[in-house]
View (cartoon, protein in one colour):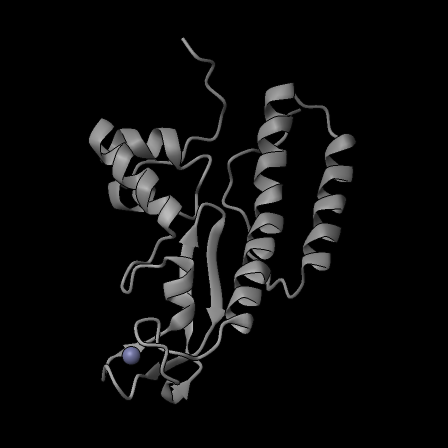
Length: 177
Ligand SMILES: [Zn+2]
């Protein structure tokens, strides 16, 4: 009997960090009752903790967005026609959506989302700066199929390499050689 590992993590509609924490506790207690190898337990815990970390990231980013003032990051003029669109960023624990102010500077005539600027998010990037850096580095080190083999079991939400290369997802731990 073994613990199933590396299956895609279900993404329930988590509303709060407390809810994510309760789910993590339940999953951990369930794991205690199943015979498993230490490596399988380690991997399953990492997978279960992603929801918790994703929710913590979402709440932290949203708090930054809520605290940001709707002023031009270049000339500090108050933005006009301010809207509150959502933006979704892939970080290493999955997609994180935040709602932030977006408006036009009356002096610069440019549209800005001051929160994006403060957080260092590139205007059209779909990945977090940290993820972008890791993916760019991996792309210089190996072929996409190899990267999927190494990276996707640990960060299944983030790379999309598994889908792009249509590799079957690895479901067992392979000992290092
Ligand atoms: Zn301006």
